[in-house]
Length: 349
Image (cartoon, helix red, strand yellow):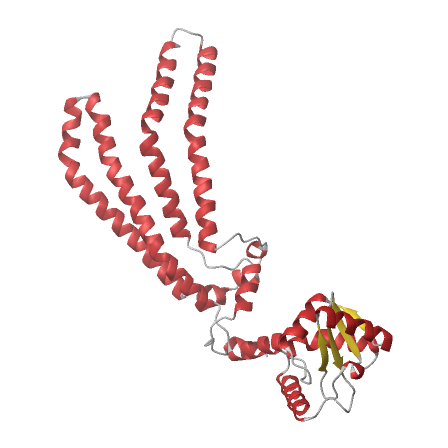
């Protein structure tokens, strides 16, 4: 059976149950490129806006080191290291916080909520199986990943060539101007390169979102055998369903004796009551024979107690039976199981 299912074509879309189970195992549609692009944009934005502050920290460290030239080496190295570490923390701590926050936020957006599962990190034989490895290499997903990587290289190379061609002459003239010109020129060259790279990664990530969703749904497709087995598991055996439908049709044709005196049990809650009748050989399926609410319902509940009719208090079942059924009609399939449990407790089935 398993071999037949492996060779059978997956032509049916994934059911909501399969997608829910896949999510429980940590299998969701996700785009690492989109998260990486958003993180890179946030990083570049931080560096651009915080650059003056970062430069001040660098200058401060250099000044501290220059003032320690006459101090003993041990003391100078300790103070210089301390100032450098403080500057490093002041620069990188906000950046690390931004990266973590952006990664978590956009990760939750991409996966449409938090996903907690240890399944993805569990060792699997398929990961070391050579045959499965060859299939993964030749898969459509890897072809798309290769195309995205190639697009990144082309975009970054093109951006580098364009920026370099525009700033080639200033780069050659910067050494003649001296140190005051070198820093601003390099920063002016690096800015468009960084912005272009960040926007390119973000654009590729936005394009990658629907592609990854399509690939995920494609991988989640079901075979006809899998679809039939799942439907049978969650909707019941088709033979049983057809038999229940036949019994309900027969029950409609037959005349059910109605009235509270003909009920074998009563489902109540508050001042609401629904009387049910089920007699093997007489009623193919349980049927509603009486119902009431308010003052009439309270009187019927008292009457049922006097008549010795078993009473079960169930708010949900009483509401479903009262609103969804008419007197003399069999109960619906949705209420069959809870009613069957009550009948079993009475020994009627």
